[in-house]
Length: 584
Image 1 (tube, rainbow, N blue to C red):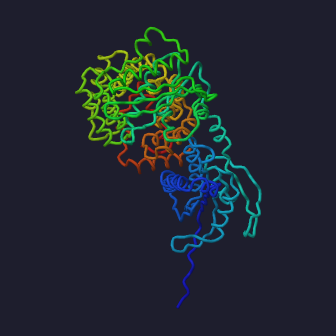
Image 2: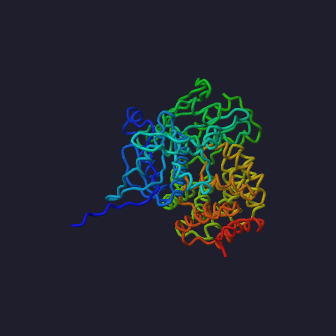
Image 3: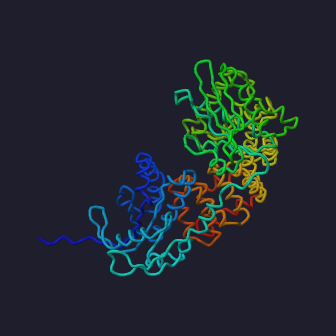
């Protein structure tokens, strides 16, 4: 019988390992394993697949992957580490899961879908030499990907390692710029008093009641956002600390605020108990604390009192208009208010099904109190969300319905920032940019700390061919919301693109794609950026990934929908694709 020939092939091998794994497991085994599993399923394995790699095997704290292309392997390693840096940004430093990565090109033995040999062993040795959060590659990898991967390398010379006969020429991927950027990403100081309102703890004994405690905190944020003398961090960022045992001083430092408001809600039958405490973010001293034990229908008065205590404690001066605007929830119907809070909780889940459920809840609130402004504005956002994401058979009729709902909200309360924000969106997607900008400006004036209004104003300014002002408005929004919705990264990238700042746009778009791999529009703009930069191969790669996500993607359809005031701005997008040979 002839001896079976050993199967060999040339492959790029990526070896990754968790730094300090034993320490992490010693602190909390269950939490570490859960976090590691989430990182693998949500980031690492999709990243490897997206770069045409194959997971060979995983160990308790490591992963081994094989690639046919060295360039793909190195690009994957860089995206992998940048993605982990994003995911670790919110966590305590001593609990962060951080990887070291080694990449080697070598001959490997293949057996039962596993790989062996020096090609694998060298990758493992390179991984051990990498910095925490870093990547080391062999000389062969460096020579193959030099000029094809847009990162810089440091030459570490020849390294002698255990069980490898010849020294390994080693290079380190330089993350200095991005690491420095991350470290510099702490929010800049704010002028005047500033505050973050944390999600109020749900003490009702029923997890299903979390929407109510969240809603109380959110409405306090909304009320405080109307004050020109106080800067208020957006819900999206302050609620990121839900369920985390992080001390107040650290939260204040990370969000760049002077004060933190925290509290709890216990709702039982017709009674509600709310506690609230205002804390100095520098000293952690309590400036004010109160407990309210009332009937449920007193919930509106309680919120007004909490807002008033914060204003008094921080010595915020109110003008006449602000005195009138704060404390105006617009209803005394507790059941209608409850439906609004339930609807928002569904809306924030951002799926077709929960969006449809939110629609029904807001409609119930309107039926109970037709003069209540909030559900009209919220329902308009639900309708626009379905329209823009093409959910639930949404059509142009959704856009018109949303327009009418936003107008109704303003008709009921012309001082509603949310109503003007919704109407600004309606005008934007009706391609009425001048009117859209008027409404966005009104929302910002009525609520200077309303991050969503500043963001939509920035998006409108971009489409209005005013990119400098767009960038200024979007950066203001992101200061108010340091952990912004990822779509804002696209808005900001688009503004830089319109200025011809393609490298800046590329960084922002890649960051968004790491957070939302399924985005097609960001990949289209990325491909155009690469085309303008003369990086045709990367443009084709971005375009191929787009078509894999959305085979029916159409530039003609986008041209009809995207509300550019100056046709030349859309032509800039198409021109970048033409330069990369992606259009006829």
